[in-house]
Length: 113
Image 1 (cartoon, rainbow, N blue to C red):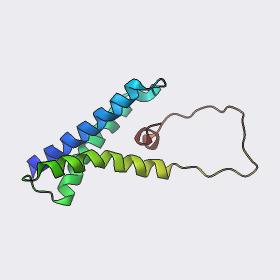
Image 2 (image 1 turned 120 degrees about the horizontal axis):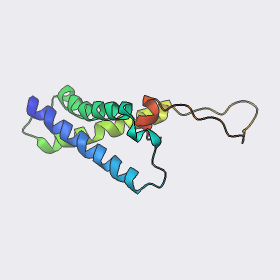
Image 3 (image 1 turned 180 degrees about the vertical axis):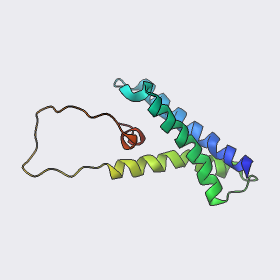
């Protein structure tokens, strides 16, 4: 059980490394990357990879499946966060006036904004 969890965590780490690499190449790196809140969410995402492996009951004798589930857990949560934060257009048309950006929340971090 513990080895399955650790393999899932390894998958979560690989997924987060891929995200960090894409941020490194991005010209507009998010400002929240230096906040402690971001790193807490990142650690929770890595642990979610291991937790999903345990929830699915993947045996330790199938390490590639456990790593694969660990990789996909943060990506699935990111997709859910992106869908949950989709905003419907407001009545009255589009406004082109700049507005003040709010402090990023968990959904923004998970969605990669």
